[in-house]
Image (cartoon, rainbow, N blue to C red):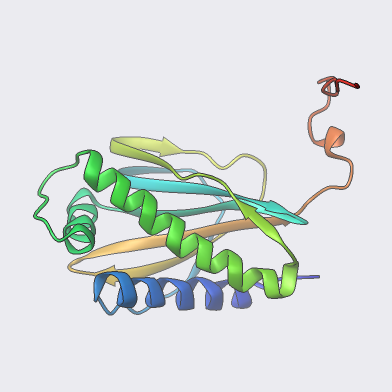
Length: 176
């Protein structure tokens, strides 16, 4: 089982355009994809989900505050001009749908995967850090004068998970 960056870009592009069209009635097209392996300073809204199975990783959606409000307004059929719980919930749900659809497309090649609950971060000038040397495949989607960036980082799961965390003891199991 392998996954090329081109296949990952195709899965991200397809999932994002389908979700935006179906859930928001907004037609978006993928911009020029790129590979990102550095930390960055961001402002706006970032929604993250973990992927786990024979392959593991993370998927994320990020955009400006204004675009997050536009997405929430369209999704919830109400007017939002600033970040509140409803906007953050809408971005978490959009990430869940987009990355969930990416996961479904990837499962055809990579096997069964699980998806975590979304985590949403927002604010100004926060820094994201990618641990390790894994590359993130990023696909921008220009939308309403802003850009939604969808990123996925995947790696084949290690068979011996303890090698990933040297110095930590194995969890104890309770036997009945």
